[in-house]
Length: 243
Length: 310
Image (tube, rainbow over all chains, first blue to last red; front, side, top):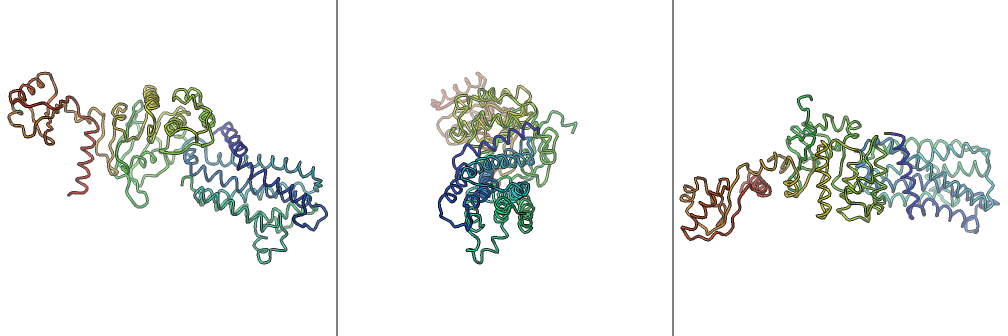
């Protein structure tokens, strides 16, 4: 399997995300709408002086969740049910190459999301702390690996329609109880569960690093690292190429 | 393996169980390079299971299969470079047009065929830029076939390549398969359509309930023996006719007769003379080989009778 094959597959994976309306809605429009709406209108109280300084890291976090978990799960789940994964299994492209292409495509789309959301947020007056940029990138990568593990686990074990439902359901759940949009203090008993989620850890890391320029807490690193190891391992163990 | 030189596909004593049921039960056959081999049989006979074992998707529970001398599971990476596959259904990205899918698949192989050439060869030029989900069932089968050929394979495994393909598309598929044969490619395909098999295949393998009940060249399977069949009034004097024709005559069904003799003009003349003497009206007269369909229906019925004696 050549570099040519990896490149062609990556280009197609990116293109399939960007050319379909419902995928664009998920990966770009919803995070963008959240960013603009919550930053401009006093719908949710953030307790901080600048709403955009709170919601810009949140929107980036949401963007990463939508690309690395939801979009990946749905796309892969349907490819499995269409027999595409099975068919690719009899080409010289190895599963590792397909995985690399999907990973590269996730990174390319995430980069595009950062550019678009970042530009809009800066336009809205966002002033991020740049000091902890390395930590932000590391947290984003760790979270992406964990999310992708969850996405592959759904795609490789459930029917495509079930993957669609579960991935969207988790997205809404994560959005609700992660504290990235709604303050955690109101969660009551869910707060403990929430703290162990990768999306909460990513949200905290982004808010700590981009919002305050402070170091990311060890707890966030541990949670992100645990998901980044566990989710792909379980996915690799349970994944079936054909339904 | 040297004694099997020339055999591109070898299936020996293959047994495959799926969900506790024995789907393929001791199958043996082989196919050579430059040969078109048809796997035939009713639904559930084990055709797809056999072909998926050759594709490396399933492992034999016992017995052995090789493709180009390679084990489809253990030596998959090597084999994938020389194997072309069309699954029974699916296997294509619905949002991709034939051109786009072929270019993508071409990138997987070291020296692929030209996508545009395959598109025109399979009569897909008019829909070359239409997403697969908007193609007809027959066009999608032809797209699957073109994707099987893009890596310039030496062995092609096609599960129902002509299902739902219209007559014009079928001609294109047939022409492509014949061209592959002339290039020395081994083509193994499953089909329901005996006429298709009879016209195309160098070798047919008939599977019933996971076993081979007949295999060989279509003309050999026609019984080898040539025959004359005719329809006339029921209850003719078979002894008299047999001795006149110097061949066994049987009344297979009421008013339907079979003469086990090659249909030379003299034999036909003798038959009609015998009928004329008795003033018997000749209903239908057919000479030549038995059609594959008749042979197979016969074999399938006989097999089912032994499986489930009345």
